[in-house]
Image (cartoon, rainbow over all chains, first blue to last red; front, top):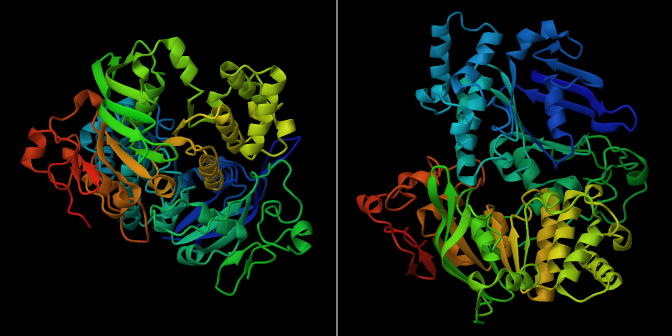
Length: 315
Length: 321
């Protein structure tokens, strides 16, 4: 059974001039897996991640967590479930209170969810969490500005783990970090997943890291999932023309590599006024597109290799 | 081999801070020839951007200053020029583009007027001619309907279009050298591909030399002829791109290349973190993170020395692969 299940999930912002940030997304995340969510800025990947956690209220559709429908669940009833669903943010500078010591920041969720009865118990638990994320115990007395970016991200991870979650949305967890630190954090997330039996939604625009870290990958464009496949399948044989272009655009760290780059023309259209038919059709490099591309919104369908793609021409 | 257009020799740049003077750049040297692209790779604090700002003489004075060294452009030492003479070169013969195009453009003027201003600063052109040059440059950098877009304000353009405007502005005076400081870091990959392709095409057409500052080794592999790897303000390795990727010799370069994800096997990490410029270790600055460290590394800082086709700052470099 899926741990997280979304059906027809949409999130629209604004009253006049509606931005369709997330449109009719169906998504299942199995317990223990890492699902990658990729796409360019503005495609709705962060909004989708937050809507799944109900940090953003959905406009339409349903969300189920561990079998329970949480779409309209009142906040009070949702609170015990919040322990099970956590998020790690991109910018560890912005997500820590600069006036709160690291120890207090990590203890905060323990206090909110009444997970430690005494100050002594809290301190023990903070020590243990710091150890888990590879930080020394004396970091508890320090403040965010005294730490490096990588150390701050470890603190963000410790905070998320404090309440022993089952599902963690990792929203661009390494994008703000230096290259030599990124590998440390990716390895830490993988170790913690194994040790704590975590399920991840791994949101990133870095396609190389997603390939490495994820079991399955969903590609978003203009608020919709346009392709969903096993990671290996998606990278070996992308089916949606957008996925193909996206993968071909990733610079390869090999000066001898032959490039067959598909350079897309134009910019991502505004989600205020998405194009008719297939939202990708104005940039789609496929020649001799059938009429359907201009008129009909393609739905995700299963292809011969098991991938799912929302495209009229993909085979 | 052509005579280098731009030569940086033993550059040392210092900043005064509350905790004392720090050396952000310490003894950096390289040459850049026409029609070639030199990549400068390093992490935050490695001194790669400060090197660029030192060349352009754009350091925030009085805190930052070039303490030593030479920057020669076509034989002239730029560091010794009067500010007035430097202004004739900056933006004209040597141009620069930055990471975040939104913060480099003035929000209250149209993008066309800003490109035209850059032209009129260096060339005796009428407003009308400068505007025509702006439109021509917009066309050259692939901005659709340039006649209309010149009258747009920066906020009306996407990030990719703004970076194209910056490139149009930088290239409007047909400079000999373009310094591009993380020009695609703020952009999405499909837009990054467009911009890199554009820079390569324009280089072919206009013949300028490019100094490309980036943290992305993939971008380097695809665009650069030669690479300089920086760590703690120093050049630790310098080599032709193919040599560097095929056979990295400094253990920091090796670590950077290995930490790039490829496939499913566990990522190799570089342990620890970059030391603070306030508390640099004696000896080799990478020693605390290096898998091949020995006693000598902590006692004595290695010099940048030739090794095969590379220059390497290491007592015990990796064997060639």
